[in-house]
Image (cartoon, rainbow, N blue to C red):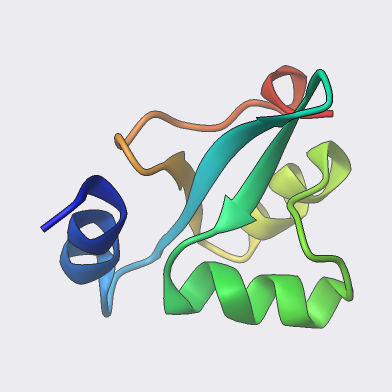
Amino acid sequence: MNTIEHARLVSDGTRLAVYQLKDVYGRSLAYPVNDQAETIQGLTGFKTLRSNDIAKIEQLGFNVVTIHGERIKPNMIG
């Protein structure tokens, strides 16, 4: 089982929105990994997490984390 599959499995049914950080053409982008993150991205209409959405997602009671469990801060993506 790889890291992404593991993160998806252990976060199922939690208040964790799990994202994978990827460097794309010099920009760090956060792609949704679990159902919660995918649903949030569906609501925003964007494929990846935007830095200004993090605080709003946290206000809804979710923790926005990487596949390694580290909290995503706005300056980590963009």
